[in-house]
Amino acid sequence: MSNKITPFNEPIYVTRPLMPDFDAYTEGLKEIWDSKWLSNGGKQHQILERELSAYLKAPYLSLFNNGTTALTVAIQALRLQGEVITTPFTFPATTHALAWNNITPVFCDIDKKTMTIDPTKIEELITSKTSAILGVHVYGIPCHVDAIQEIADRHGLRVIYDGAHSFGTEIDGKPIADFGDITMFSFHPTKLFHTSEGGALVCKDAHLKERIDLLKNFGIKNEFEVIMPGINGKMNELSALMGQHVLKIVDDERSKRRAIKELYAKELQSEGGIEVVVVADKVKDSQQYMVIRVEEEKYGSSRDAVYDSLRKYNVHARKYFYPLISDYPCYKQLPTAHNDSLLVSKKRSDEVLCLPLYGELSFEDVVMICNIIKDKH
Ligand code: T4K
Image (tube, rainbow, N blue to C red; front, side):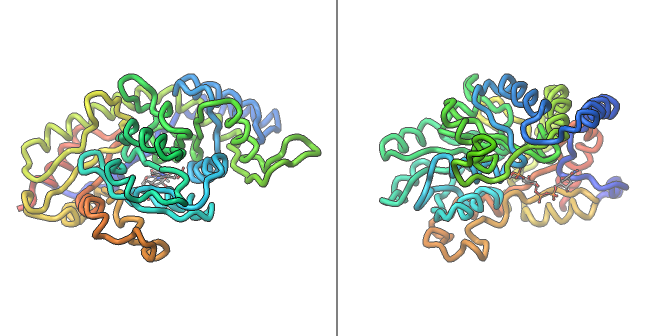
């Protein structure tokens, strides 16, 4: 390793949350304090729901306390049952939301390029028990939404998207939540837009939103009527306030991240065996992750070796998403969990690495991280 490269004094994490102006936040906090109204659809919740509906061009949006509860409720809201076809190349929450609804996850392989569910392999997995397709816009890369919808329509299936990574993603100028019956967003601190913890569901009509809103509040219709077995999925006022302040600066953060990703791409472009993952031209990138693929044969070293050498220099890249969900002890006995039907997922899961990406990351640090990757020999 070259002498010029020295370990970072402070850890460089895969991401850091966007922190709004402290004084502005505490000013809003004072108002919440004085109101003594902390949850259950208060003023801040109402403001943020309106603001996000406008920002995401999504008229039927419901806030949640996190993305996982939101996805679990989405499945309830559509009354899904039996089997749901999904991808193993994702965060555990996607599959767990099915398991918590007593639904059998059916794993479908992913597309080589987009790393999202491969529509050409969905139909062979449909049985009389299939009720829906649950796609993941992984890293904010959109699923093959038209092909998926066409299959769903032909077989009478519902479509849910886990859009945890796709805040602000658009396809040909159309907001990502326009596709499918329901889209889930995560507002965890590791996400571009966050509410410290939080999430949202976006659906297509007022009736479904009403059902979602009932389900996230115990099924309470009014003081004396509970009309369905709901859960507590409500976002609190402090989180909703955080969201309002983060929303003011999210576009600026997105541009900073775009510039950082361009620099990574430039620095790594001539490094054989390192492919920078990009979205298609027609897609507006959420700028959620900076993903590379390490092709061991061309690069001469494995993804795990890159991860380890970065770690030696105090750079905490992450192997999102390794291992595959289908390899977890709780799912590996499922009939569709076999690696021989999930070959692309397995390959990509062994190749991908998320490099640090957040607006405050300096260009100098990006160059240094790239030098660590380039200086393997
Ligand atoms: N579907 C998909 C496809 C998802 O990726 C996720 C979540 C969900 C569903 C579920 O949505 P939520 O229910 O979470 O809303 C993190 C996040 O916890 C998780 O939200 C996210 N996906 C996943 C991809 O990443 P970990 O286990 O990697 O988190 P952790 O604690 O190791 O954090 C990563 C790095 O972020 C740290 O090394 C430092 C930095 N960090 C983290 C936190 C929490 C901060 O700087 N500040 C912080 O407050 O899962």
